[in-house]
Amino acid sequence: MAEPLDVGVIGLGTMGAPMARHLVEAGHRVTVWNRTRAKEEPLAALGAARASSPAEAAGGADVVLTCVSDEPDLREVVLGPDGVAQRLASGAVLVDSSTVSPTLARELASVLDDGGRLFVDAPVSGGSEGAQKGTLTVFAGGSDAAVAKARPVLEAFSGRITHLGPAGAGQAAKAVNQLVIAGAYAALGEGLVYGQAAGLPMDALVEALLGGAANSWIVANRSANVISGSYPLGFRTSLHLKDVRIGLREASALGLELPVADLVASLEQRLVDAGYADEDVSNLARIVRGEA
Amino acid sequence: MAEPLDVGVIGLGTMGAPMARHLVEAGHRVTVWNRTRAKEEPLAALGAARASSPAEAAGGADVVLTCVSDEPDLREVVLGPDGVAQRLASGAVLVDSSTVSPTLARELASVLDDGGRLFVDAPVSGGSEGAQKGTLTVFAGGSDAAVAKARPVLEAFSGRITHLGPAGAGQAAKAVNQLVIAGAYAALGEGLVYGQAAGLPMDALVEALLGGAANSWIVANRSANVISGSYPLGFRTSLHLKDVRIGLREASALGLELPVADLVASLEQRLVDAGYADEDVSNLARIVRGEA
Image (cartoon, rainbow over all chains, first blue to last red; front, side, top):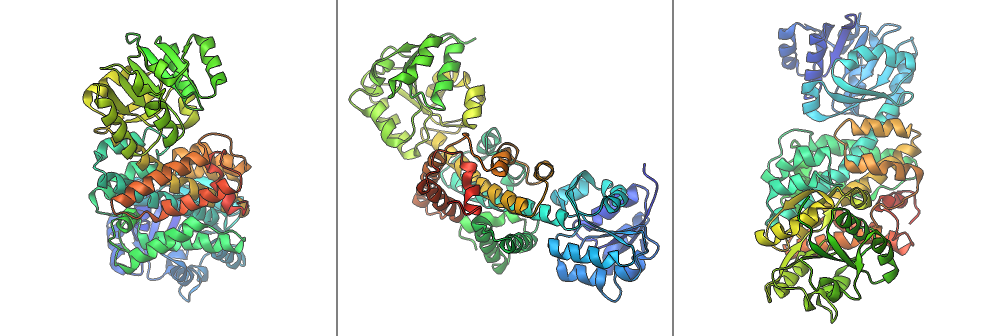
């Protein structure tokens, strides 16, 4: 294995907790912090240290990994009064696996560069299954030196790391990923709810879809949700909505209109308004069934 | 191989011509007819006989395969004055691999049943590549006896045959397939055109997409079209539009609204109106680039 590193992990949610576990299991010296402190306990039981603030988790760390839900949270844990930037040492790297805008990623890289600290935006794809199994896909942005320093940490929980360019490029690639799956999730619900209403044998239908041009990870892994009408996580509708809006804003700033993504965002907002924010995003099928 | 059959093939377009070729190569005695008669010549050169009408191609056939572009054409070649129904023998089977409505499939099955003729709706997925390679996915509807009789013909050009229920079930399943890919094609264009505008390295981006939840046949096989801005067939935009409208009509009759499919149909109509009907449907990316 790689040389053990001192790694701070900030954010122990659906994604961050299993990522931290993989880092402990890979032999790194892990220090965790989470806003809801009780979520640190399972990691402590595995051997992680607990910090009293993001700044303390960053003190003495070779690498700090952040994985939080949205931009205000990320600003707070990095730039806030007890944030990572207060204590991250020169030559150390902040790896952010949250999904935020490329613009914020570039801002954080610039702030940390003042003081010789490195930054990698490293949003992931693969959902909670990928995090549990340690097979996430990482979209990485940053300098070659920053990505090289981050790599042993990323390798602990990912099956594929793609370095796409300077800071912000990882987030731009993640936005592409979220736009590509937006239409695919919505269309899965439309097709399968129609097929069910038409009386088709659904297991045989899904097998047939997987044999042709409709074959996809989403059809293979999310059809069962649509067929049963239950939507366990997976990937939260509210978070996908946030990500699609990042893509829409970034595309709009480049003069591009994305009509399907725009429609899917409006459908997901209806799901959130109807109380389905915390289900898997395959719940777009609820729209077709008239449930939201 | 299977016992050689007398097979009539009506319709030698992008899909029908390679399907007929596979039937000749499988050792069946093939008789072809096409509205534009010159398209029969390459098949005749491979050893197929030529008929002077669909009715003549059906005379003496064990199986007749039709593969035409739309409902009026199918009505003409089956129910017209020189149509298949005029001569198809009792016990023989009409296999229709066109994509039409489940409603028309049930009508043809009913007409042929009068006289003891069998019917299978057998629309396919897999595009022109699948037809060339003989690896199409077949969505089959019909009685067990009809599908059993059709199977040796279907096996000559398909990698997978799924029997989904009585006449019309194959077309309903194909409609599901076309609805599922509708949103996926549109979203591919939106994601990749944004990614390109954001300056991402596109080959590396596509590889990364294929490693996660965005993985699909469409991303793997159609990203190059979007990136290069050229859209060789593939699967014609005008035909996908026809298929999506079948799905929308059938779903509407069941009381379902499909907002994404509805939007994609309107985008594809814009492409048709702008002169792009005969390109591959991955040309939905033209909408994002403001080209239609």
